[in-house]
Image (tube, rainbow, N blue to C red; front, top):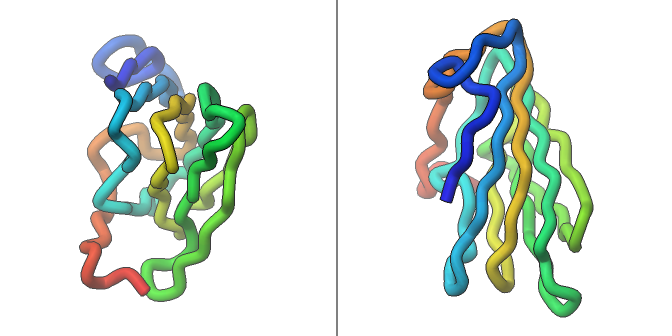
Length: 117
């Protein structure tokens, strides 16, 4: 479930968009396909991660991805040139925020899974 709070269709902001996502039990992926936002960055704050679980946050250029292992109440900042996506070992939630000169929510460059390395 995606909840949008600061979003062009809900309230006007200069450069910020924000909301949160709750994954249902049995779900693991967020933000797939991975993508970049050329003119804005994005940050994730992960929570509701059980003590024995983790989220593998994918980032980097599509041709050279990296991962960060995230546990409960940890955050990741994703620069505009970096993909962002994640997979959890169990369901979880995260707050997401984007800022930059472009607030068009759907303005993203999709990275096909086959192009990720």
